[in-house]
Amino acid sequence: MLIVAVLPGILFPSKEAVKPTGGPADSIAIGARPPTAESAGPTAPPPSSPPVGQRPTGSPAGQAQSSQVPAETVWVMNPVSRLGFTTRGAQLVSVELLQYRSFAPGDSARRVELVPEGRPLFAERLVVGSDTVSLADLAFVPSRPALDVAGGDTALTFTAPIGSGRVSLTYHFTADDYRFAVDGRIDGLGGIGAVLVLDLGQGLRSIEADPLTDYNEYAVVTKADKTEKRTFASLDPGERAVLDGPFEWIAVKSKYFFAAVLAPGQNERPFAGAVVTGAERTPVPVSSFFGARTAALATRAHVLTTLALPPVGTFRYDVYIGPFEHRRLANLGHGLDDANPYGWSFFRPVIHPVSLVVVNILFWMHERLSLAYGWVLVFFGVLIRLLLWPLQARAMESQMRMQAVQPLMQEIQTRYKGEPEKLQREMLKLYKEHKVNPLGGCLPMLLPMPVLLALFFVFSNTIEFRGVPFLWLPDLARHDPTYIIPVVMGLSMFAVSKIGQRGLPPNPQAKLLLYVMPAVLTFVFLKLASGLNLYYAVQNLISLPQQWQISQRRMKAQGRTPGAS
Image 1 (cartoon, one colour):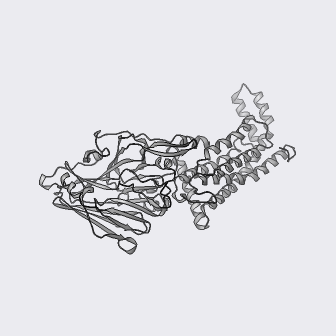
Image 2 (cartoon, rainbow, N blue to C red):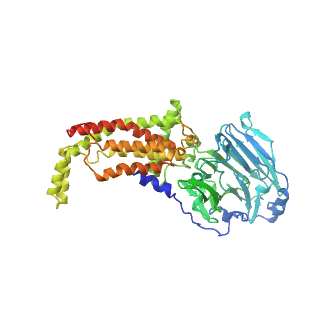
Image 3 (tube, one colour):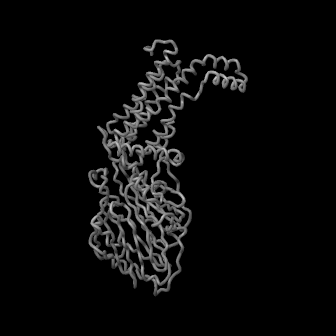
């Protein structure tokens, strides 16, 4: 069951095909001309064209002149992050997370930086009729040279002239939070509405030691009635996907981090739609079982969304850019904690709730018992095995009763070989008389499976385990570089199976599985999270005494010498 559920997803990562659903074929490609309101989003309301004299005069020529002004960076300090805004377009050019460390090659021991160099986030364009003005080309003047949120300052305003009017962007920050609000006002629209095109960039910077697993998680996530994800890898270079809104929030994500624009209020849907355009694949060195190689990965995709502006030219939206901390995101609302759900889509309704229960238990043990996460996994494995101990004992008794009635079952099968209906009735009668449950021995083996699968996704998606060491293991969320723990897991699994077959009738299939299953699972678990291997190995080791006790009782019931194999 574990191989069927997990192995295909590891060997053949799913790619959700995203096909264009409308709009001109040449619009909003990376590096193309700025989009119109129609091409920027399927449901964006195209405003009427104002009189020429009332249009913003941010012409390409004017923009080129303003781009000659040197840009400066205004730094915003927060207890959890350090943000850098450039005066060129008031864009976000740096997001440094103070509580997280980068593991990227050549970048380790530094703090996490999420913004790729040369690719700022949240550039804005204004569309009025047939005119488009890129606010990213304007030279803004900040209200202060720097901002310390912890010191009591919470607002930073950028202003710039735009034609005969003015544009102002005010960022409101909160201490100890990765979320901030954006208030904007554009004067000079001539009393008509407009469309703001918001550029979410081309993805976040990879800061993981294993780029393959990180880039495979790159996606754009949207929330309307429910959360939906479109992976970067599902788009061919130049392919465009139009996502129908309206949306409550839109985000670009990596494995552990994401950047989202969201509505200020719950259940509001201000974002008319989104457009995602695939970029050229990037050659990335990756390692596998078969050695190092270079793979062409989808590391970028251009993401745009639209926001309708009223005639007064005001707008507001919130930004979250930081880690996938499930409890923090749950407190923020908007369903943001579902931006990185546990489990693959086809059985997520089952695995996601189990994963939430498991991860909350682990957090509780870590915080209330003051235990390192490694020891939490050890005690959690012991706890699960102790809870299943009575069921395992009942399964042993059911198995022994099944062995006792085996001759009677064979007699009934021989007697009613040609009468399947009567054979079934007699077998059920036999089970009832001798209180035998044919499935009684399977339940204790099936119950730990949801927890094991839940832990697989917990270690793949939970940032709290990222970079956490334990004993010789450098990172519980990554594989053991020495491969000691998966080998221990495989050997313990073999020991459990070997002891479990003591006293059972000879079975060639069971004997084959005794050697094949531990070998196969050891191979599968070699590259899985060491924390998952640790939990499974503890489960197996703790179950050895009970397996020995069960085999002894089985052999005594058969009148055999307990010490015999």
